[in-house]
Picture 1: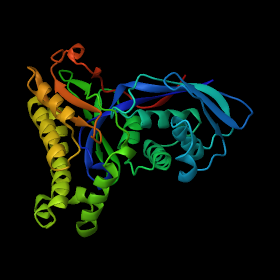
Picture 2: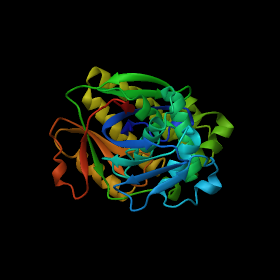
Picture 3: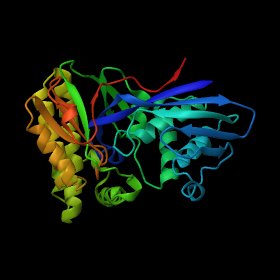
Length: 341
């Protein structure tokens, strides 16, 4: 029996910066996914998940072909098949998938499944190579041009730390988090699938601006004013200002300055809502409620937006997670994925 575990992740600040070669500050969390596989001499991988009514039953020679992957049923088998195609396990097997991560909440349930599958299939690689392989699989399985932040975070997570990621070269710098800080995620009640949102449109808008100016994560405030198109100017303004906020927030957290870090997180939310237009009334209402709560320093949507969760920085115990009508979690910065011995 081979067992592999991958955490999920919460992004503290820096959304829609990864595919723009900018900066983000995510952390692996103490919710995750375990894949257990008993290898056999067959040519099929058959997995059962407690959260899914149907089995994922995939031939070990399944190709990394988006046309075949995006019509495979059940839907969750698409990621399994894509990871089979990338990891190329030497033989088949049967097993189970167990998770404590909510699906469609922006806490990287997909990336956790991908990385846990890769490890269970015997795929050995550095976190960067692992992340790139899983990103390729997810893009083929979902048809969405997703970035690499989620996979890199869950593969490279360090207990007690967030990760300052420079997406121009995928360099990762651990940022120790203060013990006095508590991170809380609250679900908005809106489950979302990226391929069914305007995620691809936002990415295309950034690419249109980058065609003129170069990677947005490399730009400065003076470049924003040079863009005549008002919509593209707002998109670029978010990315440029967000990269600055990420670096300032990492510095603030490293120094234990929760007030500054919280203010930057809240400013990030406003930028995502106004300039990048990926928030929703539910997410905005949660941010307003949390930031008006004593002991909360800041809050923002986390992940790509369009639904999912809000993350808050607070004093320990300041947020009562039982008072929300939707699920809420206290999250701890955790280690990355590993094969369980």
